[in-house]
Image (cartoon, rainbow, N blue to C red; front, side, top):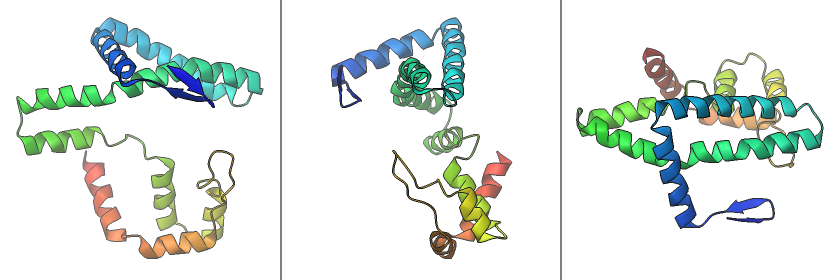
Amino acid sequence: MVIADSNFYFSKKEVKQSENIVYKEWLNINKFKQVKKECYKRENKLIKSVRSDLAVFCEAYQSYIPVLYSVQIIEDKVEENLFKKLLLKLSFKKTNELLSRLNTPLQDNFYKKEEYDLLHADNLASHVKEYEWIYSRYGELHPYTIIQAKKKLKTFDKEKYKKQKRIISRL
């Protein structure tokens, strides 16, 4: 691993080794429960550290990153193995449909929440004020504007959205 300009770089070999180790370890249910508990502990510490000074935040962040990496690195392997096992019991179409449903987040992300709120907003100005931060990233300020909200409303397929919401609500 190399760290340069605050970025972590791994060789393909290191990534594959890490993926295999984490996947194998987490197949043990007791180990998985232990790791899950530790993940939430570190996540909560990171969330609380946001209100602290920079040193506390950096320490919590440094502690959380390996957890995040461990979860992220095995996503493809878990999905691939789950897909193979489901194919033994279900058709290809049903397997894809089930995996699609399993990959649908239990909670909408901020972008989906903003879209939903925009569709139901009575007052665009207050909606934009509530979500003014949504397009700002990495220290750059890009405030959300009423013009952007109006444009988004014009291009938004309301029927498609309602249909998706009905499908998701049935799950």
